[in-house]
Amino acid sequence: MVRHTNLAAASDPRLATKKRSTWEIVRRVAVYLKPYKGLAVAMIACALFSLAGSFAFPWLTKYIIDDVLVARKSDLLLTAMLGLLAAFFSRDAFNSLRIRINNTFEQNVIYDMRREVYARLQRLPVGYFDQRASGDLMTRVIEDVNSVERVLIDGTEQGTIAILSIVGVLVILFSMNPLLAATALAPIPILAVGALWYTLTAHKRYRRQREASSAMNALLMDNLQGVRQIKAFGHETHEDSRFAHRAGELRAGTLEVMRIWAWYQPTMSFAGAVGTVLVMWFGGSQVIEGKMSVGSLVSFLFYLGLFYDPVGRLHSLNQILQSARASGERVFDIMDATEERAIHNVSTPELPPRVRGDVVYENVGFAYEGNKIVLHNVSLHAKSGQMIALVGPTGAGKSTIVNLLPAFYEASSGRIMLDGHDTAKIPLAELRRQISVVSQEAFLFNGTVRENILYGRLDASEAELIAAAQAANCHEFISHLPEGYDSKVGERGVKLSVGEKQRVSIARALLKDAPILILDEATASVDTATERLIQEALERLMRGRTSFVIAHRLSTIRRADQILVVKGGEIVERGTHDELLNSNGLYARLARIQNTTFIEESFEKLAPV
Ligand code: ADP
Image (cartoon, rainbow, N blue to C red; front, side):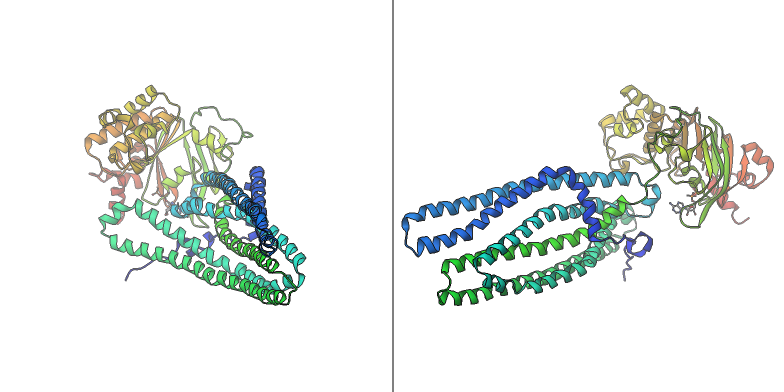
């Protein structure tokens, strides 16, 4: 039996999408329409002209039947037909114009809203992304934005037109024949109750459908990224079945929405038709009794059609509204998430363009979530240009310590000082400009080698780019690629070897030339020649910078100016290699274990001690 995990968002109540009222969604979407008032007015004007064309038809029909056909005036026939043609032409020409304006309006609003959601996403802290599936966020930016915007554009246009036509038709109907008009309105209470019921119940169905769509996309995204693992473990069938389950949930959710609509919409239409039958009945008897002309009855029935058409449109609008509410909740969840502190903030003390790189941690404490404390009272002082090696078992908190420096996460207590300034008060953009991060698994963007290196500094010259590549020992291999610096690296750099990716990422950091370096040393073994090239490149990168190295290789650790031994979220020993050996503590015991390249192996060997 295949086990299926629950939808991520649904299983964690803290991450559940906040429920919001339709009114709130409408109010907030309205803000995006404001810049396009001109388009909105033009769109509604076109719709009104088009409507006038439609309204002329029943009036002309009455005239043709009673005054031309029944009166047998063939000389008026041509004029009447020309009038009819003009009415239809004006209806359709203005409708075409209306559709074009509507499309431009709609695409502009989607563009604005999508850009804003994306910009907001970029400003959310790393912790936000830790908790959420990329596929879910993608669904919100792509699908939900589309759905939420429709509410107001279609809403303002269709809603205005529908209400105007309903009022207009009612005035005409009552002026033509008040008794018949009152008969025509008999089904209205049923329609009103139906609309109310739909409004009250639709939200949860749409919400379920949107969540199912997100869950399917999240799984798809995850699987596309893990395609090698799936193949290596031979889990294709298992994944097929997991995907089928998610796709099935989406199918069920969508079918439920459609099922209710398929039941509701024809019911409402039937209720309207009952009105038409009643009119035909009473109107017919009036014609038989000679109280009404045939032309008037036909005209009345046409007008009645123009009455129930907008009523049906209002029902569809309600459907769009309910769908938009579910999507809007998901979009505005991103908009309302707490941002990182200001990226640019001019009011704080100016940092020089390049700091010296003197870093002090004062009693820093940290918890990722709730009260599960990961760091306790971490204090350290890295002097400008020093190399600090952090060592310790996996999960000790080494990455957490260094991640606090560029404020990927904010310290819960204590403070971190950079050249004497509290980093909590430095605008993020300025702070991060001073720091390069080279991680264990080099992440490359899907583009060319050149673009990836230039990511370090977008305006670097060709000469600077090549100098950085040379210093990172990657110029050689890049020159041998079929298209040199313009070769594509593939998604996440799949077309390059691990050692090549690492050197490209070192070139990128060299180009950035920040005074502080955070380096997560790779644990993967590469051949000795590549190892030497990487080590050389790293030495050049560390030169003249304050470096924090999450060190795994004993050879790196020995060269450090300070070694910090981290265990259980605390720094338990500190000093140089020689000092620590002399103090005869944990590190000394680790270092004495011979024949190891990576310090983790020593921890493992020590574990039973
Ligand atoms: P190290 O780098 O020494 O291997 P880490 O700093 O990565 O250790 O992790 C320290 C602790 O914090 C571990 O218990 C780990 O499970 C937890 N942790 C790390 N990253 C996160 C995260 N993004 N969210 C929640 N807990 C985390």
